[in-house]
Length: 262
Image (cartoon, rainbow, N blue to C red; front, side):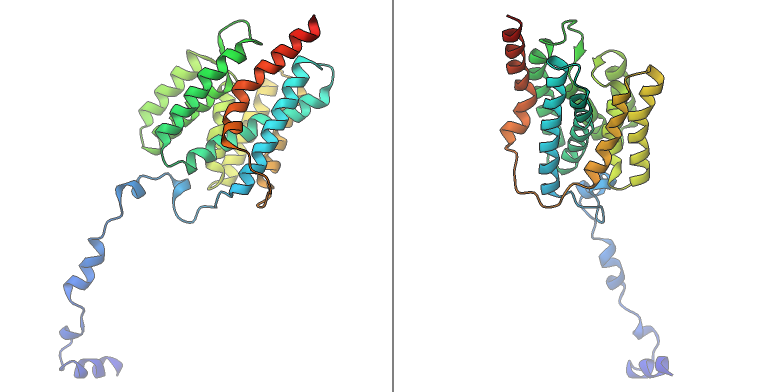
């Protein structure tokens, strides 16, 4: 009944009730920018938001727990509680690197900044690692960002080549489990079960494979800290402090150790 009325109102022809061809084809001609098409799943609409206050809170936890860990290693090796606190540092740093990659507007510049910090950090890092072969953890983070960048661009071959070159030919601090941790946190926002499982595997498996100290397993406690990070936090970590703390903190620790030995 309604159809017949519409037909009669339009002159009695059903064909005139159809929309013009251009009305259907016009939306199909509007293509999204290539940059939007190539974005990784974490950057697409509908993914959970990364709260800046949560990142600031986690930066404070990462800096303080790392400092506690290094003070424990260098000055108070018999005080286990400092090492326990220090287990939070690496996973939180890895999370911040992964989310930093998501938030950056220029992934290539982000990689270069990490690579530069890694080179600067190696001098201070070498004061406590005399073999001269092991590379500090920021090299690992730079490698992880290179992997994520190639993954984002769909270049599986380059991902494999970077992994082989990084893990086989270089002695990177935290090694494969550290790289897996960054990837796990990259996936965590959109695939919580998969990301959490990979993170747990990276933290727990080495304990059984290499018979490491039990305190290393405590790194899994970083996950609830990350997930429960407050969305409101009153303090901000200046960029110069966040970027410069790791490369520079080695020197006062080295001077203090030498002073105490005298």
